[in-house]
Image (cartoon, rainbow, N blue to C red; front, side):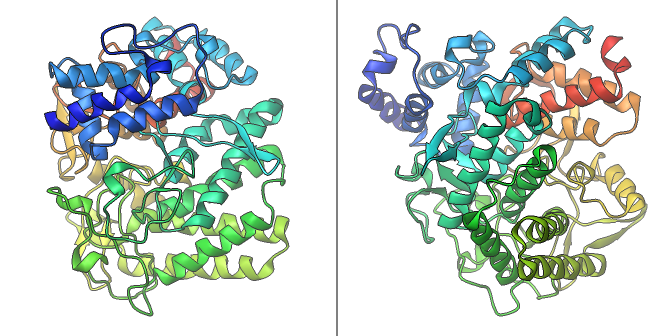
Length: 525
């Protein structure tokens, strides 16, 4: 590990105009650097780590759990955006939205707890402050969105990161244009490869270092090629939400139509009725969830109408490829796509294909994805069509806990029983300790709670008691940093991963905005 850190330090020599030397000041505060400058440093400093290893070391170092080279790595890497300094100064923000700034002022004024108000004011604009760079491609808006401390754009994360701003787009034209640019950039990405989960912010850049030697069909612009069904659903969710909020149809052109056709094609192929399909993935790693078994095609499935996924939304390999929350999400997404194909594209062929696939998956879910437990039936997390089931939940969304948040819960009673199961010790990835209660997952391992699970718990709750408890835990989870993290130890919030994780930050902002609108008393008392 230390050899990797040393190699990372050496790479700083490539960026002296921006970051200076290790011996002197590491950033010129008078200079308004671009996101590309920031991405270059983050990419350089993480190129010798896997995603989870970099996140774990950087977060732990920032929390003071490591010394020496690891602490120095954290300090240098965070100069792209240093959460310890709070929200970036106005001159250093990547984008400013008047509507978002007004929302911050209005909501913060009604949050009685100054610490919670500060966290909200930091987190809600974090995606716009630190991860976007609106630009133009072929004369049209083009907006890459990196995840934060990883210099690439995940289709899932980028969709989720900007989702909370959709409601403001109709009254803020620059913000609407930025969001149009995200949709157009996602279209470009899908046209490159529907099996990739992440793309480089600069599509001419080499892939993330940990992906360079993967045994799969890497294409130019791809950052990582882990096929995840939800990565095909999230761009549809964003597009549909954008259309409903703004009424604008400009991004839904022939390129988007072609991309959506490829999305449906990929889902059909991954029903695996004609064999495993073309996608395979193998990675040399000591971590089992970083690669797929069975020569890279994943464990066998019986074709029953469900859609296979190689990896979960945590980027961990599926045990059984029929990932239930992603299939439920796909049903909703396909129906949204059918609506748009009919109303905007006037492509009834695409609309009928999307509807037929949604219907088939819905029927298959009812037949194969429900598990019997001593407390009644619940949704399984993964199945294989042969009768095998995995009963658990993971913090990353789509999750079983988050189904209503994605409008993907067709049975309220079934969801209620599932919710009780996953938010309990019957779920092997549920943890509780002196610092909090919540769901984690294999990505960061035992005893690590993801604040995202606490946010989703609150967002899907109808209980003031539950929401108030979640807000208290989320405040604790920041360890005084003023920002959300990827995960933290159940008994010590100061032991955390990823100090700069924009999805979690913006999702927390969404939770506070929704609470202020629907349950304001929870914030003023």
